[in-house]
Length: 263
Ligand SMILES: O=C(O)C(=O)c1ccccc1S
Ligand SMILES: [Mn+2]
Image 1: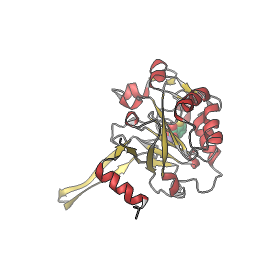
Image 2: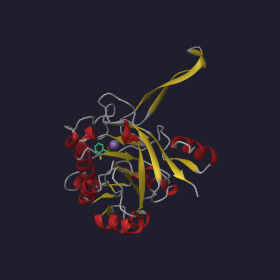
Image 3: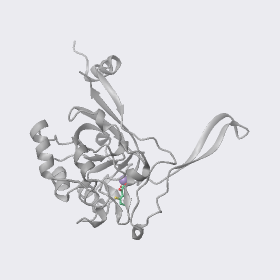
Image 4: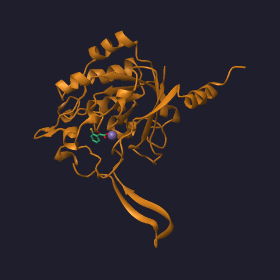
């Protein structure tokens, strides 16, 4: 009798034929957060903070716990379609109403490390995607598209945010690429290593913040501040990425894992 597919998965995990890769950055008060232009409420989204309630002491003799405070879009996090005005009218578009089927899905990884190292304002084009598809096949519908830049390996928050007088300079998307992925390839959404799914110079793009505008407008999702994408194959990984089930939430910090076939 053939084993069920989940039995096969369990055997694969036990044997190491399926490896689990953690794509999540550690969440701490040092976690870098998005720097928006001052006219867009910069500073209203708080850095992550923890306030100890007790640690096996007079306030809690047998327990250790903390209060947490942060914005929804902090650290490695999930963007729901409700996050953007263009996604506001979709159904089941918030963190508590998104279908759970969106939280486990295949992922492809597009390597733009060299391009984004050469130009921090690199915008991934449709031609760049199509050249990738020539090598790896068409991006399957229902996949996450992960944008590998190795940005998560930057030595400091300053280098990671790469803020200059005219804002941050970090890679992102040509608007046409977002439309192509959302409409021609029907992806679940895109994931990036940078602090947000859009380029640092996205406020000056047309439309402003095109990945948020067009991806959430198409009822798609986003993942930001991912790490370890260098440990994933171009195709074949399965992503487990779920937001906290926050009522009417626009997003939330998430633990993002990849199941990667070995050998
Ligand atoms: O979703 C985010 O984390 C994000 O990048 C963002 C949040 C709010 C406003 C603009 C942006 S660009
Ligand atoms: Mn976000």
